[in-house]
Image (cartoon, rainbow, N blue to C red; front, side, top):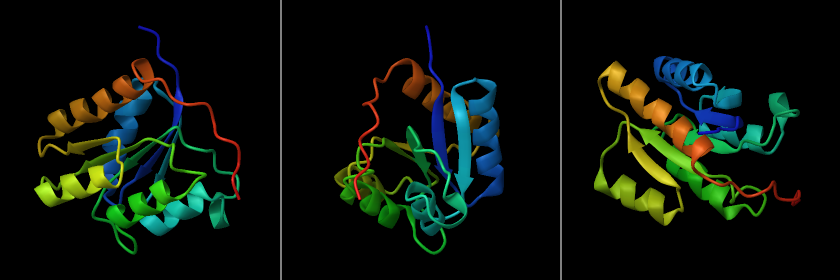
Length: 149
């Protein structure tokens, strides 16, 4: 099955989880670019090409943890989906929380999928790898939307 590479933005404050996800996606050669930010404020700067991220690419996929410092994942998801310029970017929740209220709330905010991080490292690596496989090999993504200011 043919896959295409994509730009992935991971919003994750845990360095070990970020590194595991990066390794799996890069080893699977599904990413053209893999970018990591540690909280919702940095993610908004990245998405809006502000500050240190003035030349940041538009991500084809956002992997989002919920429990983040400064601006949590729920708030960030709401901001992304409220923005005409960003709302068509798929956002996959990748978090430790299995709370039903988190699952319900993120789907209400139009997340594309909700995945709970397994505690076991090998299982975590399989889950992260399946995300890349699914989004590159099976999903048709819309063309890039024109810039909306």
